[in-house]
Figure (cartoon, rainbow, N blue to C red):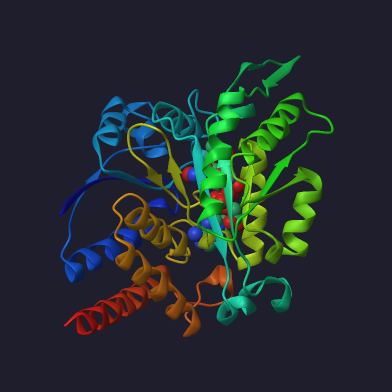
Length: 358
Ligand code: NAD
Ligand code: IPM
Ligand code: MN
């Protein structure tokens, strides 16, 4: 089959880790005989430099017509004072495509639990997913403005917006360990009061699923103290942004966490949860795992290529287990050397799969 993928390398380490993602995709295409058609477009700071806008019309149109979108990362100090920042382009893309459900899996096996700065016995076997609402809340609420005297952001959610993200979380929990933790600040925030009430109502349709509520401040503590407790965490936009970066400490680095963003129409988008890491850009030291695992998520969730997706995940795990570590995980393996090693294990995995089939 043939798949059309819009590729957005973006800024900072974006192009470096996108090269890793593409190399992995090409290997999978070659060994499992899929035709991945890649179309690269300008996005973020790179697009501002080229066209004056972070999300040019041509890029948006290409995204709408693709079978899936792969994004690396955008942003950087160069554009921090631009009238329209790279980040504005990312928010506009999510909104235009209606990508309200951001799925951020976090898991760490026994073999690589030593890579976490936390105690091995605390993190080993942790396996949960943060389901982050992505097109509402403080990011988009109106009024929103600031001047020298005053600044306003608005935290607004409709029951429909809350309902649809909770349904995503419950449906995901059904396929997992059947537990949903809804994170809010219902002791203070009006939007959280509606959030909690809606969660209780939706839970009635899922009698097999256990729902628990946590306030976000306590959740931030519990996630680090007992990560093994969690299965599916569902929360609003800003809480999800913060808690998922915090959760990266469990696995050892922000550089290993991928994500998928889904909506009701158009296509899905796959991207690392981290940013453009300007502090290490251009040095060939970035961890490409977040991008490689985003490719794996794309193969599974958009193209239903379950076997190919699993081979990539296993190849990453094998590479880490063999001791190949980028700088963020305490090693000195370069981005390209790490990627080559993953590709080696994908080839091995593909050969084994072919041998098992015949
Ligand atoms: P960041 O996520 O870029 O970096 C935070 C820290 O994690 C840095 O020390 C960085 O070196 C490290 N890091 C991140 N990814 C890594 C990787 N793959 N390998 C090794 N180390 C990695 O966050 P920041 O520095 O706060 O933001 C930098 C820019 O990125 C800002 O402009 C921000 O708005 C933007 N940003 C973009 C996205 C996105 O594109 N989705 C996400 C977050 C931040
Ligand atoms: C993320 C990023 C973005 C967000 C920024 C860059 C707009 O931090 O994808 O997590 O806050 O959603
Ligand atoms: Mn973030």
